[in-house]
Amino acid sequence: MFGIRVIADLHIHSRFSRATSEQMTIKEIARYAKIKGLQVVGTGDFTHPMWLKEIQETLTPDGDSGLYKLTSGSEPTIRFMLTTEVCTIFDFENQNRKVHHVILSPNLEAVTQINTALGKYGNLSSDGRPILNTTAPQLVEEVMAVSPQNVIFPAHAWTPWFAVFGSFSGFDRIEDCYQDMTKHIHALETGLSSDPPMNWRLSNLDKFTLVSNSDSHSFWPWRIGREANVFELEGATYREITEAIQTKDTGRFKFTIETDPAYGKYHWTGHRNCNVSLSAAEARKLNNICPVCGRKLTEGVEQRVEELADRPDTYKSANSPGFMRLMPLSEIIAAVIDAGSPSTQAVWKIYTPLVNKFGDEYKVLIDAPKEALTAAVVDQRIADAIIKVREGAVTIVPGYDGVYGKLVLPPVEKEAQTPEEQTSPTTRLKSLRGRIQQSSMGDFL
Image (cartoon, rainbow, N blue to C red; front, top):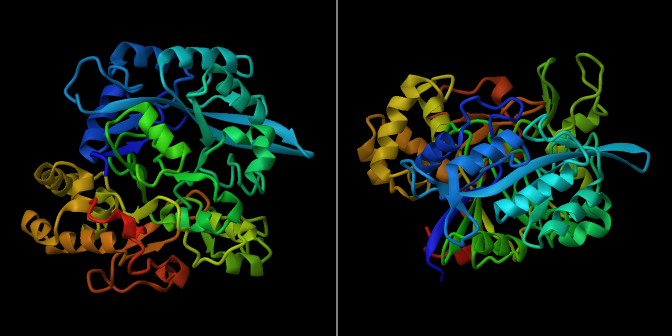
């Protein structure tokens, strides 16, 4: 057994990325990472000159760990990993391909060299997630030529747009995307709309480690760390974390924290403007044509997985890190008190004392016994809901075409569902699926 639990969210964005909070600064990220319970968080966007300048001004190397810490501030326990996301747009087999990739790097010297290399293919100042006019194999070649310690993998692999398996502009195989540079690809990011069991259904993904990150565009705790990676390490270092990922080492890479994939914005097939949301089976019956407007539907991740899978949905990988399905605590509280949004003051008034009592959000969601939760809250329903989410005894109304899924608590705690809220059995969490899926975890939690 190794020593310490390290929870890492390695894919977020800075305020220099489109549709990102203007308050997304290094110090705010560190502040809310601590509240969430993260030990390591990605910087995001190191390709952007202004953000890189802020990184250089506010962070300092944490010894020789390959990670960084605040030069000054009140969150000395938070470590940053140098990370970014880039978009490549290129033609392959007479089709335009658009794929996003996450890059991890061990030091600022390597980052500077990466930026010099990638600057040949696009304007890095245009956005925190720049568009590069190069192929995916060329991107990998450029990044790995800088340092063999760099890590690159496809971002949110199943999203309909801008993803390696995206239904609109992606591929059917990792090898088709990265070609001879696939030898440097050791992982893929599942994204909010898929989870490990969905990816296990593809036998040609067995050699890749599945990682989960938030892709957060704000520091709020219902965004940052909503998905993350849990390691058990001798120490939090760049090498320990990246080696555990690249080697699929279940001794060090213990499990991923997942939202239910139905919570993701592209889980089901549908049309947002037409309020049409369909399971894969229902969409196929309509030939993916919207019954309201007659246009092509936005194909969801569930349906895309079905198209490529060569295994049943009951298949379980025996040699992969486990997973645990959770929901952000703010979302749980909002559902219980019918607040409408996790950002309301009514939610914060419950959230803050809970987190203060147990230390951070993950300790509330994962570790706190039911009796302690019950004693910590006035509303018994909140303690019950946290436990039910932990155990997988809740339902998610599936997200579709850019609309997030919705947490629905059991009828005993909420009003009976309307017909529109009734979902197929494929979206109902099984009783044990919210728990860690590998028996080897033992007493780790």
